[in-house]
Length: 112
Length: 118
Image (cartoon, rainbow over all chains, first blue to last red; front, side, top):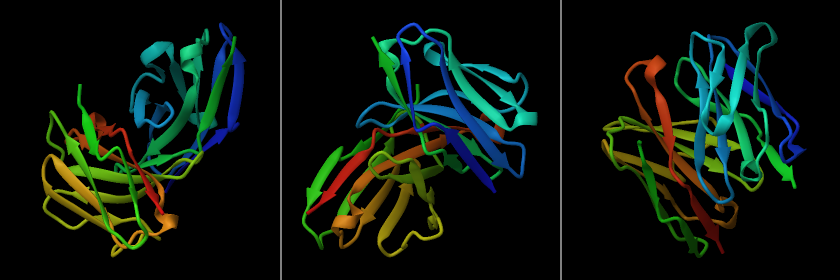
């Protein structure tokens, strides 16, 4: 079985500051890990995903995440926040059955 | 890129009526589609897996007779909320899977359908 825990339901950073959204996972099989972004009243957009290979994954809009098996983590980072980054972010895990299990989400706010 | 559409984008209906939501993959074929439900300020909960030409697989706790899923073609899956009640009001999101091998799989999500049952 798979599960995801996102630490912090709300994160607020200043424009230009580092963004760090935390995600820990549990999986009985080698996991595939994802970060999705959701803007108000819209569907989900894939930011990045980890399947196998390189543990540092680069995604769209300057985001990246690092898969750390020893820590069962897949934290999302961006060096410099932009106002347009304000949204809801979901970490997700997929096991062998291809079903995606989502975390509870983290709302990112950007202060001017 | 791959695009998934949903229709309608929002719907208001009276309690007791049935509502059908369509999910289409516009530029690719999807043998598998997924239906999710999202309550306000909450995460997405997987309701069911829809496979073309076969019965849907429902997650535990999801009523099969309440949420009818039909995947009649490789580009269309429908979710029908039967005898809708106010507690069925939610944001329904579908996704379509591409890729035949797990390492190549990607799910593309639709924009969602907001259902309000009065």
